[in-house]
Length: 258
Length: 308
Image (tube, rainbow over all chains, first blue to last red; front, top):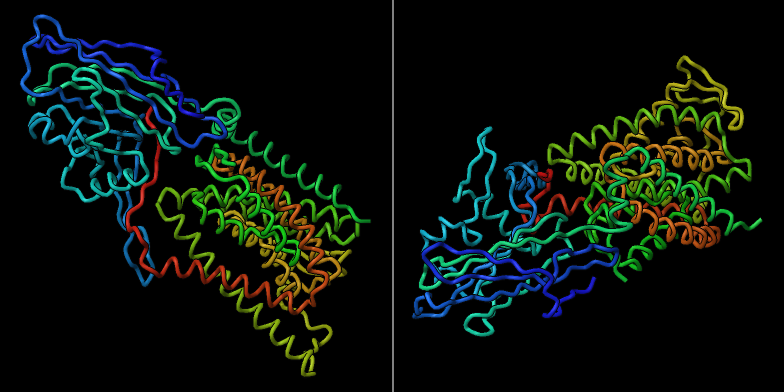
């Protein structure tokens, strides 16, 4: 499907109340809440719009506002594997299972994360790819090991496929209080529910956040095929085999030479 | 034109996949083989996961071998007793192959075993075919002595108990080697996504002494029946058969096969065997390189499951 990115098509508005002390409010909207995967789907862009609402009580800020938007896809269990040489051939020898990790993770910001806020805040708020917990299964224990090479490689592979990304300049401030960002969803994105968490920072402090969601769904024929294959495997197999017989038979009739 | 494959979960260009079907169909029509051993590697090459490629190619081969079966049936060139005995072994082989396939996937070693099987099988079969056909060409061109087979020299395996009479092929042999050959073909077919025609035909000729009149037709029937059962088993256990992918491939395949069959009739048998042997050998070597050369990326990821 083509991105329906007309800025005026704000299909929903969600307001999030910030921490009580701060007087700014954050209002965000997505250009679409349902992304349909059809037979000619090759990826799509969603637009995120937002506005910082100030009122009389809002203190005067010295610097500009900073925005960090985190888009998280449905969680899944992944296995990262490493090949090494055994008897002259390359074999998967070691691996690590990551439990309940995002299948899609995009961190979009108005600037580099280490400029927006300090390391301690990033860790506490789990902002950015390096501070997102990716729990691994180690000897029946589940924990996050920041130094594990498999974790780094998982992030790298997911980034190469466009499923994980961290873009420090993807959020554009149109005016000092109005912003916009493009959420890129490549062709490989898994279907399911996506969370969009937008955080407003100023001078390194979190002022407000706003949550929103959208769904990626397969529709029509694709959905039918996937459902059939996964829930009625045997029937699907028989139907596929019959399809093969029909094709073979039609060919033999069409090309009959005697 | 891009189309999104629902099970393989990737967008592909319809014309690229269709052309692959056409090309492999041409080769399979020309040499009288199913073409699975070429199609599976090609699909892996364009980015389809090996497991989905293997499972979907079984469906593609089922279609092309069915149209072949009908053609041989009309010519009465099928030994149905022989085909059904081979099938009995083939179904057991398919079940074993699909079970091993599922188990290897869980161990992260499926891609390795698919690669290794291709290297071993294709290099050996390719080398044997090249050797045999080269000798035949030398013989016809330089007039060397033809190798005569002594009449009545039967391999000992045919003398085992459980004798059966295969009327159409005019042989009287034990069912045990027949079941065994069926088992091997079914087993390899399920793991490698190949019909096994290029293995079965020489086995039937050299081990069972099946006459040339019925060998191709019988091999076609067996390929067709094992591939149908492998399709159903793969769909029911691993949910990996992409019907959309298989349909595009089989439409290209059956059309290509018609042109290939025409072209094949104009070339002498031993040259045809030499070309097929070189092709088989080349595919085997391609897989060998992949296993031996240091991969560009040592790391890879596999999705185990979603969490609702």
